[in-house]
Image 1 (cartoon, rainbow over the protein chains, first blue to last red):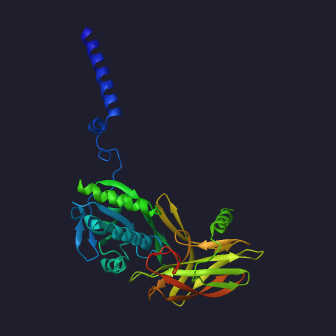
Image 2: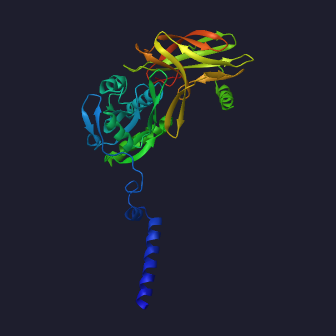
Length: 205
Length: 161
């Protein structure tokens, strides 16, 4: 009986100690709760993929490791958001200068039916040459958009043509392919550029 | 109702003076300010058109459609962001320009969508088009062409690209 009571008290002290440690210390929190994004119950963004780049080469997530990566999704039959994002990204890369070489930047189509690698190649040609166009089979594209939790939906129009609703967020991943943040559509230029600078710096440390 | 509030907001924030190089068109009570579009990336089939419509009359008018010899079709669209998702819809009944209001078609909001463009718009050129209004009828205009991906009209004062 006495032994049980001691054990119970010991447990209370232990639990209280861990609770306090978790509350005050980031290191303890990571040790107990895991790194944010690691836990099975926490939504993750990104993951393995196999796609075809704008030169026709098959690429996987492994080709994008070792450097931080920037991914954004769109399609070429897009009058406003997609060319704007490509243009803004080109401007940011220009301002980063040589530091932009320390990043991978990928424009991923959500419309593989129309956006073949050749179409992607033509479409991205006026923008910064460091931007890679990713396309693939409908299955490949679906798997990648799913991994990135990107919403996309075909919206049919009267004449048989269609447009695509899609997530317009820019995703930032570290050199290990882990999700570290986003740039929202319409985010101020200096804030977006700051995020990219920090992404580059993160790779240097 | 929301449309009226939006129109009122647009009217309130619009700068009074137009930029140098702006071109305007008059049709009855309507003034159409500086239609512009953007150079299209190679192979692109669609382009956005932007302009400002002011209605000085006593009755509302509606922009129903747009035609251009450079596009199979022109539609009036509304773009909206919904939780990070870009959604684009044709305004089936057109875009109403309330009496006394100014409505702006600009990146990120209302725009004209040129579809089925085979000869992509190039920077510096002028793209002819006809705006079709319910009351004011057809108005021939020219869209001036900004660089690829530009956020604003060509020759705007202070523009750096």
